[in-house]
Image (cartoon, rainbow, N blue to C red; front, top):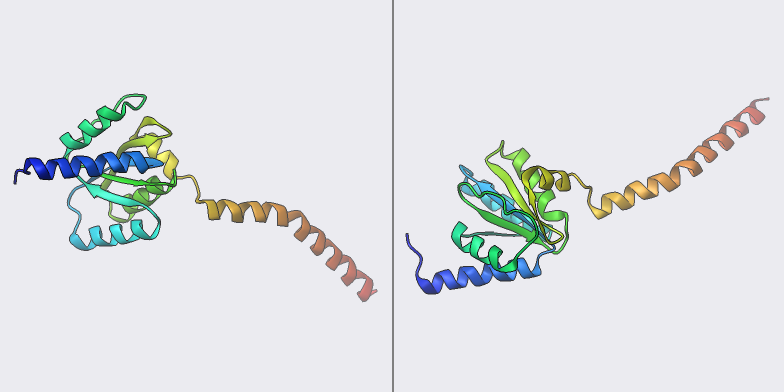
Amino acid sequence: MALTKQKKEEVFTKVQSALAEAGSVVFVHAKGITVGETQSMRNTFRENGVKYYVAKKSLIKRALEEKKYEGEMPVFEGELALAWGEDFVAPAREVQGFVKSTKDKVAILGGIFEGRYMNASEMTEIASIPSQHMLYGMFVNVINSPIQGFVVSLSKIAETKTSS
């Protein structure tokens, strides 16, 4: 079904505002995904501060050309959607989670990270970066490890003294 000129302008404006507010953007291809899977994906995205919008490729390309990002725009094949958020890593990480869970019905086509186009493999690499909360946990573990080793040593010394 063809879109009216007014509807195209609304979609174009929505894509422009998404690009303006985004920390990073992931170009998503989803084909053969069920309504339930789509709803689940949207709910998970919403919970993690990621927005998701499906639009015509031509309107997305036009909005991207106006922004003039560095690098080469990825090739868009098939259906196209945008996933974006203020967090730089969350959109890629959340989409990658659904790539795995939907058995490749969802695919990352590329994205925009720090003002430049990234290809699919680069965005997949970005998706592997742990969340900020996980990094905090890892940091606490690194700090706690020597202390824990010291406490275990003291406990062993105390055991040997009490047993003698």
